[in-house]
Image 1 (tube, rainbow, N blue to C red):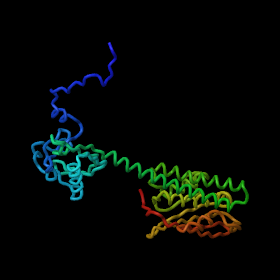
Image 2: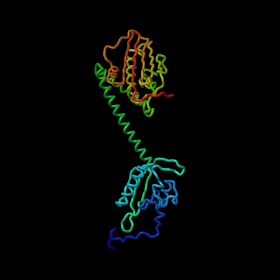
Image 3: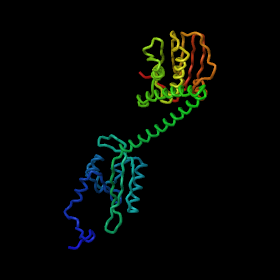
Image 4: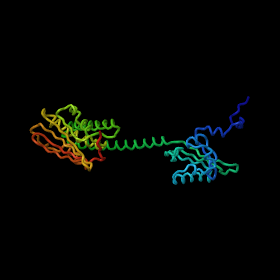
Length: 340
């Protein structure tokens, strides 16, 4: 028997006993058919379900009388339908907004992936337009949220890299030798990382100043368990950027306290008080006492250099024989709020 290719085989005619009306009515994709005057002539069960309508209430009615929307959206939809009627080509809209009105009068904005397809009569002219749709609201919202997260992550990474670059340059300028630079730079990176981890724990909603202080003082023992440390001020929530700036300053104070100040002296005490004014300026007073023979530093340290390059940061320090006091003012980038 000779070999026959697929093209040689006879094509079986489609069976004539398929009920296409029943077939389309059972499909999960919503379908609605309009004539050239935009009157509804058919809608399948999926369409009626999503629109919360009954077929006999919408048949032979003008589509925008049955399903009104904003003037702008209706004008756009009419334009798409007319293009299909004129050109005989299918049009697909990836994201078509529509205000869905339920039977009880409630409204919700939905996003549809919509398609307008032509139906041709025997002479090849477009007699009807077939509308189909798929609800992509959740998909589009998720896509938008992902973009927002990606943009926010990109912004944070850029800010972090810029901060690390500045910290490295200022650490180099204030270090006497390479070993001094490596030690101080590593400590500052660890301080940045502690704040980063703290912000992660709050889902980047921010940290309270008390939490920032706890993180900055953690290497020297838990402040809440030490009788030498007193922290007092309102429980205000700082944004991520304000947390990083504030934590760098407080880290420098804590490091200096360990090397030269109250943490080095057995009778040393630390009092930290803070407040915020009506203009969004945070004031932190860091005061060390219980020491003797304290003298002002002979060279410009990292904290002073940090304040000199940040327009929203100001630091003033006073030294006494028994201790020192540092006033820090930070103009917050975002309004702080008190939390319980």
